[in-house]
Amino acid sequence: MTVDGSPTLPGRLGSPEMVLRDDPRADPRMVAVLDPIGLGVPMETPPVDADSPIDALLEYIGLSEQGFEALFGALAVDLGPVEGVTSSVEVIRGIDGNDVTLFVHRPVDADGPLPGILHLHGGGMVLLEAAGPGFVRWRDELAATGMVVVGVEFRNGGGKHGPFPFPAGLNDCTSALQWVTDHKADLGISTLVVSGESGGGNLTLATTLKAKRDGRIAQIDGVYAQCPYIYGGYAQKPRELMSLQENDDYFIGCALMAILVRAYDPTGANATNPLAWPYHATTADLRGLPPHVISVNQLDPLRDEGLAYYRKLADAGVSVASRTVNGTCHAGDCIFRDALGDVYASTIRDIKGFADSL
Image 1 (cartoon, rainbow, N blue to C red):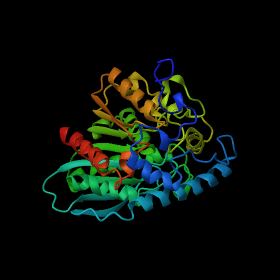
Image 2 (tube, rainbow, N blue to C red):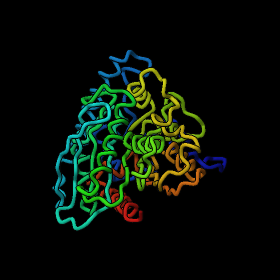
Image 3 (cartoon, rainbow, N blue to C red):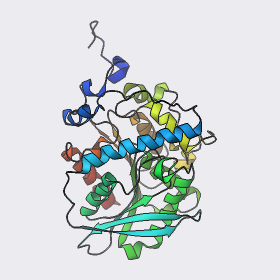
Image 4 (cartoon, one colour):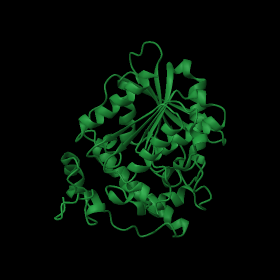
């Protein structure tokens, strides 16, 4: 409470200088991991912005990718292997004529058809890779619960798997969806959930919207999107998306996201295209979609756009549930397997429970 008795607004709404490590809502176990490596405070201002030459942006994205990969690799290095899971690799031909690598994870003693997950990794559709240790771990953990999980190495807007702007990555995810559908019997898959976090949450929702447009929505039985990065207009912070200000620079920030937007859609021609930025989907786009779960993180700048999408789905008559993972930054329930093991496991259980319910 303030001195006059009025409530204090959360995060940087109430205290513009607030940092993640000092926010009383932050899980102290998460802070203990982030603070020693300088991520409990705002990142330095990027040397480029969304108006910089595209070559300069791509160079900065490449360096950022290396930094994130080092972080996620360090977080996974001391984790033991996930027991009872086997994996294999498939290379398919995408709809654009390119090769798309798929990573297939399954329980060793699988008996009969199992729920399937098509997993689309995070990274703002611009950086990181499905082969990264954190994403491999995530797929293994999901598979260990009794599911077949297929990870997609889609093309990115930048980094080592780029630069391939929109719609290249979406087309690769669409190709993977079709391949999994065509091979469900061989894979031992009963029902199929499309799922991903952050940029993978964007592609999860966009792949579903595209499947509806293409007359293939029956291929998807359920959709589970985590901390979806779906607004696209991060140079602005509209009042209806207050978390963009409340939690800005809590692990990720609007300045970085605006740079990633430019790499994904260099001309801005798709700024309100729901296949690029699902936040802009209409009721007509959403009506008739399969059941969804939208999971968000309390201390994420992207929290409110995910919740807005949840409300749009509900208004369109879609079966939908939402959950907010308290005390966590962007994707915190996916990243901190060691420090937040109970939180991580809770999300794994929720995805499995959702898949089993379909």
